[in-house]
Picture 1: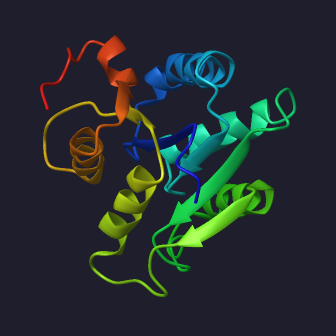
Picture 2 (picture 1 turned 180 degrees about the horizontal axis):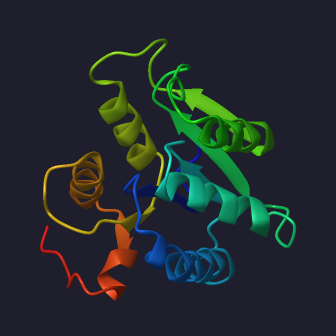
Picture 3 (picture 1 turned 90 degrees about the vertical axis):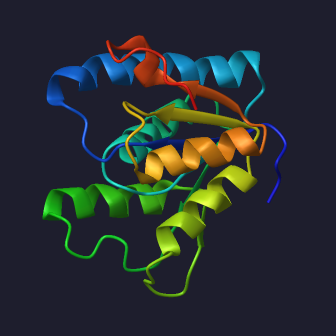
Length: 168
C-alpha cells in the first residue's frame, strides 16, 4: 500500500446525536482541506459503526467532485458486522461495495484483530483524523497514541467541542 498522501480515520462508535451534524460539517471541511491543500488522495477507514461510517460516507461524497481520491477499507475480519442492526449492516455493505479496495487484518475474528486493524490503518498513512473525546482506555485512544508514536500528523475533531485538548 502507498503511504504517500494518505489519511486514516479513528473515532468512537457512539457519538451523541446532538453532536453529529456539527461533527459531519467539521469532518467534511477537514477532508476537503486534506484533498485540496495537503494533496491527500487515499483515505482509509476501519469499517466500524459511528465515526468510521461517517468518515467513509464523507469520502464517498467527495469522490464525485474529486474522482482521483480513493477510499480503502481496512477491516479487522470478514465477520465484523455480525450482530449489528440491519440498518448499520446495510450501510456497511453499501460502503464496502463503493470502496476502492478492502484489506482484512485477520482471516477470522480473534481477540486482537481490532488492534491489528488499527495498526494497519496507521502504518499506511501520513495523517490521522480522529474523534477522541477522552483519555479513558479505548480502541480510539490506542490508535491515536500509536499514530503519535509513528509520527503521523493528527487532527482530533473532538478538540473543537467542549472536552478540551487531550494530552497524549
